[in-house]
Image (cartoon, rainbow, N blue to C red):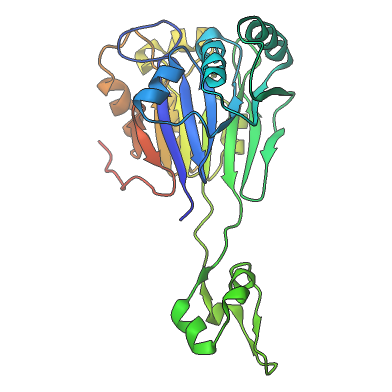
Length: 313
C-alpha cells in the first residue's frame, strides 16, 4: 500500500511553553515529504523524529501569524547547508512571499536548490496536483487571511492476482496495463477480463488540516466524508467566549464539526499554553465525537488506517 503518513512536529499555539512546539506537520505521500506550517523548532523536531530533509519539496503556510511560519528561515538555511538540490516550493499568501523572500535572501542568498513561491489566492484553489495526489485550499475564519489544506489521494492501481495471471500465461510486460484496468488479450486473440486477473485497488484516502479558525459552515461542507481531520482546538469549552473573541475553536466545537462533516477520525491540536493538562479537552471532544485523539510532538499516524472505533465516554 502506498505510504500516506502524518508526522506531528508541533501542536502548540502562539504563546511558547515547555509542553508543545508551535504548529508544524509533515505529510509523507509516497515518499515525497510536504510540510504544513513551520513554527519555530521545526528543523530540530525533524531531526528528533528522523524526518529526512532531502525529500522535503513543498511547504504549505496556512496564515501569516508567527507561530505558523517563523521556523522557515532557519529551516531553509539548514537545507542549504545540507546541500539539498532540486527545488522547494513555499505555498503562501502574496505578503508572505514578499516578506519571506527578503528574509531568506538576506540570511541565505546562496542556495544549491531553487526556492520558489506559489501564491495562495482563494478558497478552493488547487495548490498541487499530480497523478497520485491533489491539494486544495479551504478558507478559514481567522483574524488574518487563513486557509486550511485538503489532501486527497487519486485512484490507485489494481492489484495483480499472481495465481490467475500465471494460469492464464500473462507475460510480465502486460502487468502494468492490467494494473491500469485494461483487459488482457492472449496471442490467440482470446480476451480475458481484467477482473479475473486483478483485485480491487486500495481505497483512496484523504486528510484535512484546519488551522486557526472560528467554527465554519464552509469547512463542514468542504471536508464532508474526509478520512482524517486535524482541527484546531485551542480552548476548552469553558473558555468558548475567549475562543470566539480570538477567532479560535474549542475542543467541543472541533468535535461537532467532525460529527457534522461525517469524518472518520479527528485529531485536535493547537493547544493554548494555559492548559497543563489536556485530558479535559479530549474528554469534551470525545463526548461529541468518540474517535478523537490528541495531537502531540512525535506522534506518527498511518493515514491509510482508521482509529479503532472508540466508545463514547
